[in-house]
Length: 316
Length: 316
Image 1 (cartoon, chains in turn yellow, green):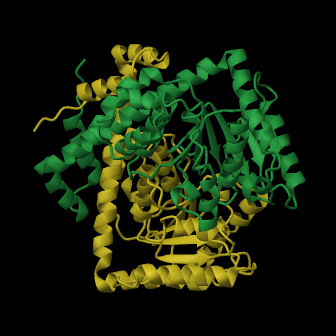
Image 2 (image 1 turned 90 degrees about the vertical axis):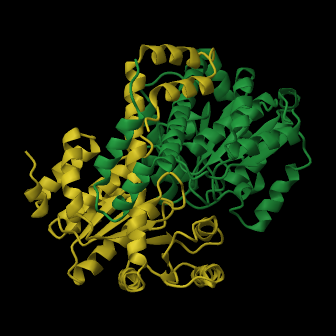
Image 3 (image 1 turned 45 degrees about the horizontal axis):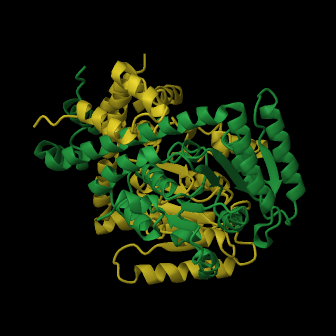
């Protein structure tokens, strides 16, 4: 039987077990989370995002070392399906990550997609609550892509770092496409490649244009070579500077409220799905309708409206 | 006033107007879609997916020409936020795409994220229905990434092409990470780069291993250089071969049922969200709860459960 105190004391075995229950969407995990929730809220949540191949995992690998030098307890939740943490990379990468395996102040966990819309975002937040209560002071969420409606890391993290690589298009292009607003820190990784300086200047210029009218934190652009550690110390320091700045100018509280609201909405969506799925699986009417819909004998739009009108009623 | 007949006759102005109404989630668009739905179901839906920078748009640009040579009416829906169609690319790309602007048998539309989970997938399918009724025989859906639960192009397309680039990791790594099952056709673009042959063989070997036990269509691997058109004719032919094969072995009907089921589930989720959002915005209880949640005075898990239990009731 899992106990709150085991999580509070930072027992890694207990933590790992609870996270597994969360992933399996066990009712007992939900009840435990309700009790853990009031104890959480101390961790600094960092989002690290970028296209596959830009070197996010390598960067995080070194970031862990930098935060450990500052004696921070650090956890990583990898949502990126191409991350070595989630089994998406070559053996060498995975072995390299193992160097943190004996450090009890480091916890690395991958989240597999549960195949449900909303489910992944909720499972990630649920897991972060567990890690927070376990005493991890920094929690990094690694994900592919930002600015996508479907998994919005900005709804889960206090500070977001966007990783790109120098190139005549790719990384910078992705940044252009509407994620400029999401990043608090931009990292031009593999900056020993040609075009690094140009990419750095492009990004800086774009950010300056965007930000000139705003007050508060100005997004920074940093250059790294994660494979040899160059510049990663500055990345760690800049994340911490961003946290300090938010706490000083009061924007941290506003951000925290935003994250709580995001979580609430995620939960609403997820619980509604569960209800709908239960309803679909139990109702013989709907099973019958589904057959007609599959054979294109019935218009699915009207059918779906009917189901939802039947299921969801306002009571106040 | 938009008329069904204007859509049926392929009037591009009417089509574009209806698609705009769909994007804005106008109730009148939903009513029109119900009437259009029984008239659709003739188009061959192709999904083209891959990481940013692999050259999807350039490939599609040439694919359009190849399908036009076969006298096919072709439409493109770009869901990829880094696509030039959606405004994510450099001016040169966008100008290049303009060459189809005077061809009335080509229709290109980008879908902006509506910021709702499920919303983008539904808007894409709704748009495809309009284009289908307008007489477009082939509809290409361009998207970043496959195998992600959130926007699953496999739920929208009869045939899925996954584009990657030769490299010592990146493209192939992304393919490894669980999207091998999704692709019916793998395209190694930029195959004039070093490592092209190795990437081609890696992919072919991986597919052979996966597929050896299956019957029916065996996924193909093709090499292209989209920028000069090399290999793109074969891509067009292979998509059409896949369609033929599915029609011959009966798997097309099964796939079609799968797509209808996916659409129905997408609609259920989307309509449920709308109900929930309406409920949240109208209910003073929930507004009040939200304030407490934002200030972490109330556990959002219990609060969300209460809302959904209040809103969703089984009636049969």
